[in-house]
Image (cartoon, rainbow, N blue to C red; front, side):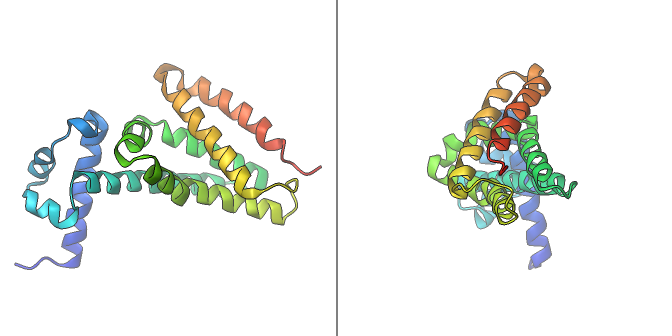
Length: 196
């Protein structure tokens, strides 16, 4: 029996859901494709039909997590009409979403190790840095920022947040207090670019 496009999409989403759960719980290296297809009630051939290999499946999971984080950033930033507040709300959403237990291992540990630095950075640029740069360009157009390179500012802020996320994630019991410390510092950094 032929599968419809909708059936195919449901199969892909189920594979991603199962893979994400297992990658989160066990880590990429400790998950066998057999576990994923068994839980999905599929064959390895069916998985290979949709994903080239385990690496390809992980990349799809990683991209789904990045997309979710990006959507959360947009959602939180939209809660304000003030551009400075939008920027800070977006930064907070990026940090808090990235350190959530269901995202940490995929984004912070396995992502760079499995995908390699180049692919990791491309995904970061595609989802996280894109929103940040758009917000900064909008602020520059409204003459809210000093005349600085938006590309450089985007990379500096993104790098600072990525490093802060790793620091926050080191201590699960101190996530909230560390997040507040990061936001205080980030606020001071960002406000240093304000056009007076």
